[in-house]
Image (cartoon, rainbow, N blue to C red; front, top):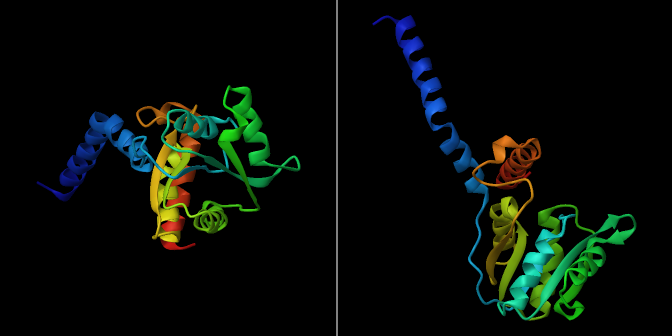
Length: 196
């Protein structure tokens, strides 16, 4: 068999593989980003900033309502029209039926997950928490777990995944917003691994 024929056969096999296994490959790409633990007892839940729809805080509040955590710390960066995100998120959860007493504010100026961990971890240690459930968007769990575990190897870090309106593991490629989420998250994950 000549070189041209082998090259054409190889390209054809790759294209056929891509067509036949497209959904599996794309689902695996989405699933890799999600590293969530089942609900379980922890000393505290921490809601990471960056969710303007309230899914993270509602997921954490449900953990408290179900008896998994005694308190929810709401991490909130500044910049939302002069407010800290936690100052907007907590009233949102209260309007959804959760008592204000569930929540504690943690205001900071972080602009990345790494900076947020640098703001949150000292507070967790100061309050004596050892077992922490970090609650974030499903696609953000793998990177967040890596960041928090590296920042706080002395703490047990569990991950709670809040559902995202756009991103689902088995269909993210059908929605433009989900496509942007996946590629941005991979970009940030790779940058974190490379230390940049």
